[in-house]
Length: 348
Image 1 (cartoon, one colour):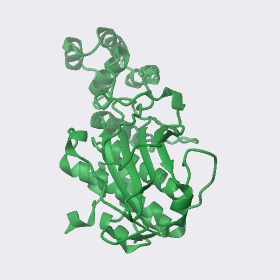
Image 2 (cartoon, rainbow, N blue to C red):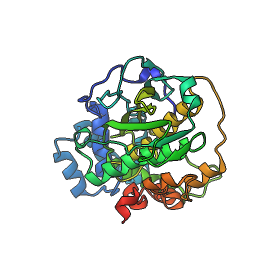
Image 3 (cartoon, rainbow, N blue to C red):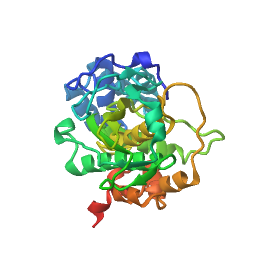
């Protein structure tokens, strides 16, 4: 889904809560947590629902009325209008850190669903032939709700995506080798995914695959607890001068983001999107959000994205993409930690 850039939050608020507790959205989310995973309509469930002060009384009363009819399917369908009123996209935020050598000259350049500030010196970048990708930084204080292993996985996904996408234009060398350009990135914000809501969404989506219909049934995610990610990155030359920089922010959405039962799932998917956008900026020497072009990926890039060996051995540092295992895992709603082996050093 692509939402208007104007719907995005207008400022950078590192402490801004990732999920607004709107009365309607909050009540609907609580009701879904009670009902959808279990499909319960018995007296015990009704009593627990009514006594739970965190669920809106209006919804509790409505649930009991629908339960009295004995139509389980109708009850679930009755929730759809409620879900339609909830925000369908997580609001991205641009969070500036202190990892760039300079923040001067950055200009707003938003996409349809992405917020960014960037600058790129086209001639200098076009003259570069070799590039290396430093490991992405992901401080613990940025996302304390994620585990150490999850932060390593998300940071490695950024570096891997950069390495694979930059291979189409540059010769990628290992981080310890001299190169015309060096890419450094740091994650500045990562809000966790509501793993319960994501798990329910994945189960609902998987369930529709067993329904015999002439037209596939589109099943959006429950728009509750969608994660978002903000990253800043730069490319510097051999003298340390900044030749390109970007502060990037994007949120998951209910229609196209893959629901997985993991707090790191949305950050993991958005990390690959950032790698694609930043690499496009360096490959073309211009903003990836301006103009329109159809990019046909090279065979090496396609192979790397499905888990085959990367074009350049330097990218092996960040491991291989999960490929078919990741695709199947995403369809089943499995956590990315189960299908992605992470960087090479963690597999030793």
